[in-house]
Image 1 (spheres, rainbow, N blue to C red):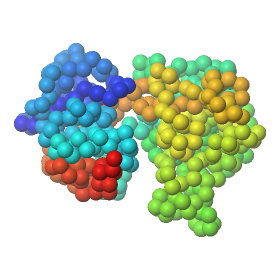
Image 2: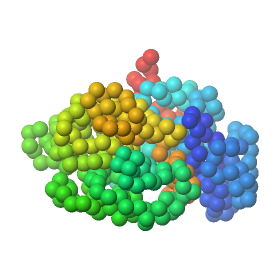
Image 3: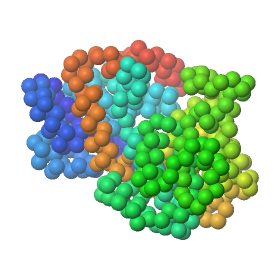
Image 4: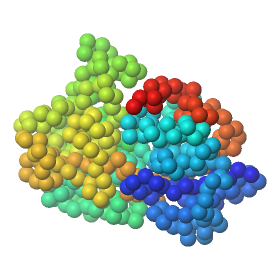
Length: 402
């Protein structure tokens, strides 16, 4: 009998999302009654209460050391790791993130098998699971909230202040967004989630050409992928594969958009070898029109160079004076205001958790039940038996460095 434990989140600030909400945990046990049991580690900060789990016949426990598979959302504090277990969570190690080096060292030292959700891909290398859609939804809501605070033309609440996504969407029906131009970068789950919000708010989508030339009085938006934001320095035809392998061979042409955009929603993947969307001093130019940035990607000093840190759900907004680049009050005159929260789906935790769980039950966990070493799981195994996984040997120098 396989025993799955839903562990409590230990990262600070605490995350309230869950891998399996109560009804989904019950569904899983009913689907595989002879195979598994699911228990939940006692934790009061989940978006679903202990009582809700009990009502779905899920046992609340104080010790998960007898579980075979431990499921969490964010990084597990190194001191909380149980040796010899199999874990699934977002480890944020595959890009050699310095703050999680010790975590990966402990995973190897304790001979833990770590399967990272971010690395679960199908045979076409398409990611199978993630919270990207909800990061985009919440990030776009922040963009609309921020523009209302900046312009004073309307007022909306943040996603965290609504019970769920449907209540949030219902508030668009009586909101006049006035005139604004919104640019979304990227074309993945994050960007599509952001576009979902804008469409639901009846904001019109335009092509890049029409967007750049639009001068009407209705709110509009445009989604731009890398082939629109970058061009080859030698004027060769843009090819996505070439761009992702050699981003340093391309120049960014974002400046034409910065001259005609009020709100930037940044949802693109950025490689440190690629040019940034703009440099800090660009915001001093009179023709740099952007005054609100919702940086969902939140790459510190990355594609948006003003992203100096990750903001928090408690304090989501900060700003720079456009001429001095000194911190100032958000939405004040001559300021550029930013949102850079790095756990956005936690503002709609119940919706995000249910979306995530559906994929876990339908596509991920059945693989584990069928064969714990299934190719998809094997390819997402960062470490096992005290060694780095087959596709993560490049992290050796990272974990050995001081």
